[in-house]
Structure formats: C-alpha cells, structure tokens
Image 1 (cartoon, rainbow, N blue to C red):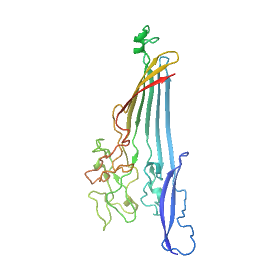
Image 2: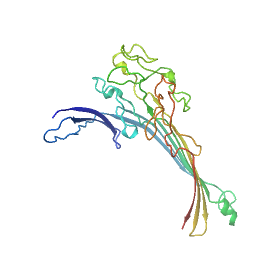
Image 3: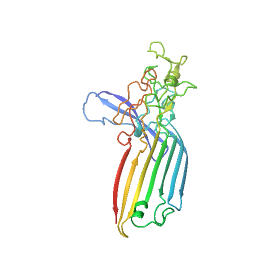
Length: 322
C-alpha cells in the first residue's frame, strides 16, 4: 500500500473563552489498498492559534414615574488573533504558514469578527393622554377609550463594520499569498456609496520579482518577507444602522377582558445593511473584481447582509387578553 499525506488548516472560536483554536489536519490519501484497513481518513489536531479580546462596556438604564423608560448600552472593543472564525466566513487564509519565522503568527491582526463600536438604545413611553394621565385626565366613555392606553417602544442599533482583508491582485511568490498594502495618508474608504465603498488610490502591493506578472501599480524595493505584503484586516466593511418602532393601544373592555392593538415597524427608516465589497457566501456571489484595486469594480458592494429582513417591514396585530 502506498499513498501520501495532505495537510489542511481549520480554525474555530471557543465560545466560552477569548481564545480560539487552529487545527492542522493531516489526511492520508490511499492510492492502493492491500490487506487490512489501517484507519484511512484519520486526522491529527493541535491547538495553534491565539486570540486576545478586551473591551469597555457601559450601560445606562432609567425608569421614570410617568411611564418613560430607556436602556442604553455601548461597547468599545479590541480583538487580535491569528485564527480565523469558522462561524464568520471560514478560514483566515494564511499567507505563508510553513515559512520559518513567519508561520500563522505572521497573520496576527484584528479578528475577522471584531466590531469595535456597538451602541444600542431602547425604551418605551406611555403617552400621557386619557383618564388618570397628565392631559385630558377627566375624559370618560368612548373618548377615553379612543385617546388613552397608547404607548410606544423602540430599539435603535448602530454598529461599526467588521475588518476585511484584501489580497494582492498579482502573486509575488510561488506557494504563498499576498495582502494589499495601504498607502500612508490616504483614506482607504471611498464615498461610502455601494458603488464606491473603498478608495482604490489607497491600495497597492509589492512589486513581484523578475519572472512574475507585474501589477499595474506596485511598491518597489520589497524583498523576502516583504513580498507577502501588508498586515491582514487592513480596512473595515459597512456598519449597521437600524431603528425598530412600535405603537401599542390597550383597550380595557371589562375587569377580565382586554384587547391590545399593535402596529410594528421593523427598520422603519428603510436603511439597508450592506455586505462588504468582494463578499461571497450565504447564497450571494461577489462582484467580479470588487476586491482588486486595479479593477474598475473595486469597492463595489453586491449584496445586503439580511436579504429577507433588510427592507422595511410593517405588521399589525390584534390580541385579546382574558
């Protein structure tokens, strides 16, 4: 029996800790079978990657006597890692894991799931109209049923984008990959519009050695490890801004029976949440050339993050309580 060993890398996050693991799997491929089966398809796993997460977390909650309450939370975080997140796009894509002195640690950078700024603000308010309230407190009968019992609730979300790594359009060495370089002093983000989210003028790559195809724009004078380009996660993708709003009306029919009317507006501002340029997966395909700074499609966004729940949605409901 003869064959060969193939080596692959798999990374995953340990949910209860700030450390994730990168596993190296060696699979034996048999080309000829003789005698007994000696465990074909076996694997070897080792903990290789490291992650470090730190954050500042704040919250403010207040309840007022007249039916107003709110909760505000803010998180500022930082996360550095040389492991990819299988729950968030798969392998990190190591540039040169087998080069001594570089390895997977050479791709230590911002975690691919990092959202540096997260702000949530939610609350509710019972409108001060009707019997026993500040305004029209003496109203009775049908008029009281019409103007009393109204309340509103809201949830506002604002989050920054996740890091994104852009690779070189042209290979600079055999058997390895290369990341784009950022040009100092130039903003990597474009107008922010879906057709110009990144600024191509802010990116370049190392010039390849003689014998390799040359990029149309590249940085000269880089050799050795420098041919692998810049650090991972050079820039960040689109963030999230969303407001959900609802109105409730309570009808007191009797001591036992009550009825509640609801009008709920999800993403009431109809603000789209975009994927990053060059994103492919979850049933969508990346626009060709959207991750290549030499291509006219560079920085073009081709999909939204929540295709089925992203547009504004309105629903009405009537509930009977007894």
